[in-house]
Image (cartoon, rainbow, N blue to C red; front, side, top):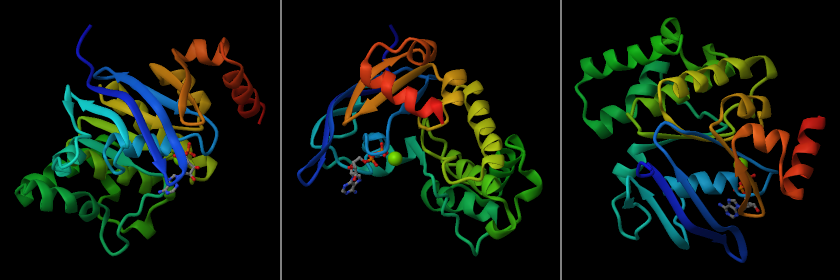
Amino acid sequence: MPEAKLSLRGVEKSFGANQVLRGIDMEVTEGEMICLIGASGSGKSTLLRCINQLEPIDEGRVLLDGQDISEPGLDLGPVRRRIGIVFQSYNLFPHMSALENVTLAPRRVLHEEATALQARAATLFARFGLAEHMLKYPDQLSGGQQQRVAVIRALAMRPEIMLFDEITAALDPELVGEVLAVLRQLREEGMTMLLATHEMGFARDLADRVCFMDGGVIVEEGPPEQIFSAPQVARTQAFLASVLRQ
Ligand SMILES: Nc1ncnc2c1ncn2[C@@H]1O[C@H](COP(=O)(O)OP(=O)(O)O)[C@@H](O)[C@H]1O
Ligand SMILES: [Mg+2]
């Protein structure tokens, strides 16, 4: 078996007295797409934030290419560059064009030469069908377009892994498809991805593996056909019955 790109070993996390992650073990292979599903409050966002060290973990380890990135005192800059994250709210700077939003962090952090960086960013905009919107400001773009810009902004840092936290949850239904199409394309390009999502159809079609979380543990995981068609655990069955009924 190839060495895992990312491994979580016994990850625990509490906020005060509230234990939110209760021992998460996970191995992610390069190029894999994993969907995290589960009710609100089950710990999906916290898990993603603990992976790229936006939240320090209390117990356990997070390994990237075998290196412990959860070790206290580690310089987190390189870690966060290697593991990109996109949130539900895209938070583009309103006074900057889409292109400026995308090039800001690479310019500051990667110290890339301006012309080369602009060219690389333009390639990203073209790749995701936004070439003609590159010079627009966020308020001239739809929510779906802004979220696609936010994905491009994360990709501009050349991450090796991408984390997506409910990135379609705030969008009008007619705009969800264009953002999911970006994720589909990234998967085809071989990006290693973890997504917290409520888009069950998408998870079913595209995930290599689905993890159902409840109460801070992964209750059940497996290929989507197994999780969606033949869940083994009663809590998974109850969750899917409630979301698929809607
Ligand atoms: N920064 C925080 N401070 C305190 N409690 C938090 C924080 N982030 C999340 N929580 C709590 O952790 C639990 C899990 O939340 P979250 O990871 O957001 O779940 P999900 O993404 O599955 O809805 C909730 O009880 C939430 O209130
Ligand atoms: Mg969440």
